[in-house]
Image (cartoon, rainbow, N blue to C red):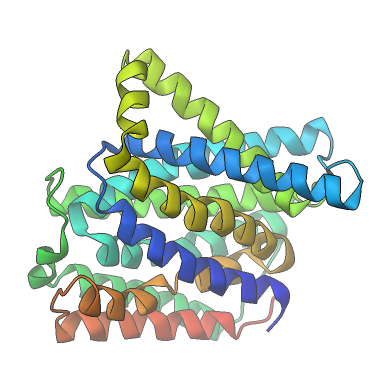
Length: 301
């Protein structure tokens, strides 16, 4: 397993922990994304500056072409995709929302084929199919509805559609950033994407006339004590690791390994949050993870 694949798995583990925190924050998805982005943006820019000073070299920012692709990637993958994902968490709960995100490899495989010419073998497509089957099994279990945090109620169908929409945005954002990172450093790419996402969410809540209210809400200790650690592990480290994965592994394989979060989430929701994980939910998650394993063993042709 190479560096790209290892970083994808580590990102999945970090996103599992951050998702547990996101599900506990009483902020609307747009405001939560705004708060996450400004904290993550500050941490990543500090990281870039620190590395530049230590190594005494300018950041590798690439050209205007790569910056444009990264900006579009940020708008689709982070500004829109994370907002949809947060809404899915609020309706379905962290574990089910993470399971919904496992459809991202399907979109990634299609995009990788059409854009980068990455052809996966038949057994890898079998793995994609098993992943989708596992998702269906998990979301069809109504007893898992008890995992929803109960902050902003919504229909299960809305949560499912938001989860799938977020997964599609993640795949598109990953493809765009993969292309751009060829001429931009991976850390710098993560910083650019997060900065652009912060500016986009800032403009969005400003247009809605809720800027002052959103800033005050995100700065309260009640919210900041959860947003800060979640953004540190999920946005700062998670997005940085995902950029390495996108750059050094095939798109579908990187996205598939990042989708192993449900496997990490099962013991967390059981032991930490004291939720009873049903057998059908465990079976569905294992089916999805086995599908992920098949895809991870694939080699691009």
